[in-house]
Length: 319
Image (cartoon, rainbow, N blue to C red):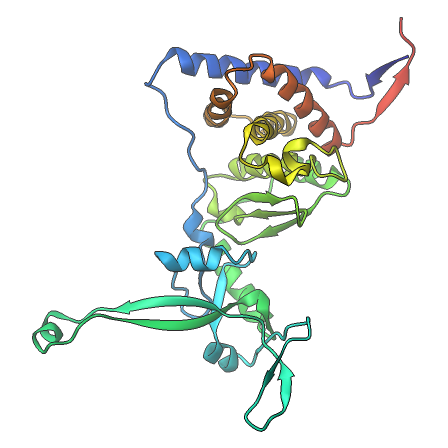
C-alpha cells in the first residue's frame, strides 16, 4: 500500500523550497557582499512600558520585566493600581502574609523590581548633589484585576500608530489550523513556548507590513506543529534539544514551512524571500557538516504545512 495527498497543490511546497535553496546558493556566491537577516518589526512598540505614562523601560529594566514571561507589555505601580480602582491579584497557592494585628491574609502576586536613576543638573552638581537610584515595585497588568478598560485603551493607542490590515488569505490559513495554540499579542518578541503551547507575537502594527507579520506568525505556527501532541519533533518536544544541533534543524524546518505557507497565501515578495533565505542560511551553516539535512528538513516542513492546512493523507494502492 502507498499514500497520496488529497491536495492538488503539492508541487507549490517543492517549488518554494527550490527557490529558497537557489537564493541561499546565490547569497553564498556573493561572499560577504550580502545582507544579513534582519528583524522586520519594531520591538519598541511592544517593549515593556508603564501603563499610565507610556514610558518605555530601558537598560536593565527591560530585562527585569521581559524575563517574567508575561504577554502584556504594560506595567503599573501599586499607587497607579489604586488610582485606577484596580486590585493586585492574590496568590492562589495558599501563601499568606501576617498583618500587624496578627491576622493573616492571602499574599499578593509578586512584584518586579525596576530602577530609575535621578541625575542632578549642572547647578545641583555645584551644590554637591549626586546621582541616586530609586527602586520601584511594579506589577504586570496581567497580575491586576479591574483595569481592563485602561489596558485596552493603551493597546488601541499602540495599534493606531501605524495601522496594518489583516490579509484574508493568511487569516484563513491560521483559522484552518485545527487546534492551534493560543496566540497572544502585545510583546516585543515573536516566539513559541512548547511548555505552555502558546505563541507570543508583537502587534501587527509593529511590523513593516502586514505580509511580514504573517510570515513571522507562520514561522511560529510551524514550530508549534512539533509539539508532543501534534507531530512530536525532537527539536520541540524534547526540552534538552533546545539551542543544540537538533534545534538548529528545527529552525530550518520552521522557516521553510513559513515560506511555503506564504506561497499558499500569495504574500511572497522578493525582499521577503531574500530575508527568509538569510535566516535559513544561518542555520544551514550550523548544519553544513550534513549535506542531506535540507532534504530531511524539507520533508519535515512538508508535514508541518500539511498539518496547518489540514491536509489529509489517503491510502492508495501502489501501481
